[in-house]
Each structure stands twice: as C-alpha cells, then as structure tokens.
Length: 236
Length: 81
Image 1 (cartoon, rainbow over the protein chains, first blue to last red):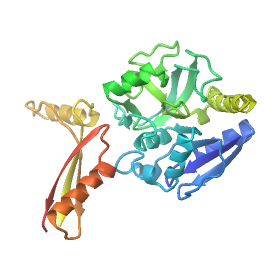
Image 2 (image 1 turned 90 degrees about the horizontal axis):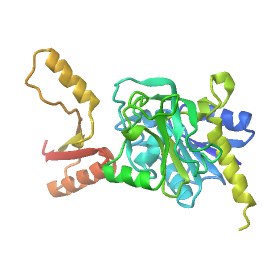
Image 3 (image 1 turned 180 degrees about the horizontal axis):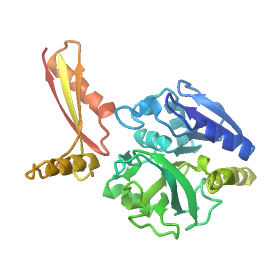
Image 4 (image 1 turned 180 degrees about the vertical axis):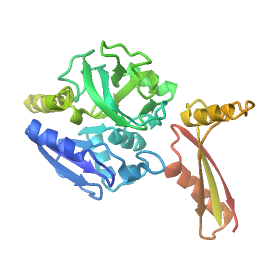
C-alpha cells in the first residue's frame, strides 16, 4: 500500500508514522509537504501529530487552509482513507471532514502518558483487525484533546456507530477517572459517516513495537492493510 | 480603520481556564465572582473602506477563520482611526 503523510510546518510525528509504515509494516510511505496541491496515487493519507502552524488561533485552524487540504478533501470525498492522529484529528475537525472540535484539557495540563482505549466498533477500515470491546494501550500527547460536539451530533455519532474509541480503565470501563481530558462520553476517536475518515487523539504510531511498551497501535495500521486486501479481492 | 473582534466559548462549553481564574479570584477574596469566561480579543487594522463594507468583510473573516461555530461565538466593532 502507498501511504502519504501530510507534513505541515510544525508537524512532528511524521517520521514516527513513516518508520512504522516502512520498517514495521513494510509499506511505502512518503512525506507530502503542505504546499502540494496535487496528490500522488495514495491509498491512505495520514495527518500526523504536532503543532501545525503553531496551533495559533485554534488547533488546526490555520492548517485546514493549507494548499494540500483541498486535495485531502477530494481524496476523502472519493472514499479514500484518511487517518488523523492527534493534531491531525484537530485539523480534520476544523476542516469539517469530521464533526465536533477538540478543546483544552479540563485538567489544564499537557498530558503525555499511556492510556487505555476501547474499540467501540470493528466496522471501520482502521479497526477491522480488532474486536469490538478490545482494550488497547496507546499513549496520548496533547493539550487540547477534549472532544466536544453538541448533543444532536453526539446522538448522531452514537446512532451511526461512528464513535470508534473511548477512554477506559485497564478493565475496559469508561469511567470518569479513565477520561484524561474531559472528552464528552470519554470519546477518544470518531469516524465520518462514510467510515473512511478516522480521527483519534492517542498515537498508534508510538505504540507499534513492543520495545516501546506496547504494540497495540499496530492493529490500526494492520486494519488498513487488511481492508485494502479485502477491497482488492472483491471483484468490481 | 480598526475592527475589534471578541471570540468567546459558547454557553454550555466548559471553560477550565475561566474556572481556574474564578477559583483564584475567590482565593484572593473576590467572593462575589460567580463565573469567569475567557476568550480572545483581536484588533484588526483595515484599509479605509465604507463602514458597511468593512463590517461585511470582518463578518466573513469571523465565519471563515477567526471563530469556530462548533464551540465559539463572536462579535465585533468597526471603528475609525
């Protein structure tokens, strides 16, 4: 598979993503500078973590107008896979490719630690190698990770099975104590209605090798590979 | 001319920064403080154009970039000078 990793000024997780895709999973991955207006033939685009454009004004607010974003939107509207990690999630929300917004953590702390998240649905190209209810150990690293959307949007997300990850205890319970940043309903990641765009605050690329304390994050990338295999095996 | 733009979190959106400041004010003896909401204040200097046109352009700026309607509200004033 060919992955394109979008690099904004201030992105800082693009090399971790490339490392995992190339060295751990043996895939092709290229960095794409945000000034590009035409994208190569990528199967999946990744918007990595960092502080795009300094996160000035709001996280992702300036990045969503980077020249490359029109091509990212076209890719998404065609049904192409888009994965937004941390800052990438914030950019996707600002761009309107995912509903809601990410606000300052209620703790007022920058949070950098391992958390447990529960897979709420395996029916996405990013979680099909997981089972529903499976608990993954993946780190977070953010200051603005509190997921917020109005009540109607949350209800719609829930009804459409678009809540993909929730913060939980090690035992899999979505308690208040297990919610690191005050996200509504412990939401850690969501997908769009078409299920081809996923945003999550935790960093799967930082938990893709046992050496780093957890390899659970690899399941997200393995899911993407699996969905591509399934798609190519299906006669058109 | 100048536009003064005020962007604040919508009612109902938790503002932990405001709550922290409220609590600090209470500690400092300002017990009458019921609530603090923190927002952004921007001063935008514009080329001189008719005021209506300036208002319309600033409105567009707010909608397009300066405020996120999912979480924020805005208001602004346009003044000479």
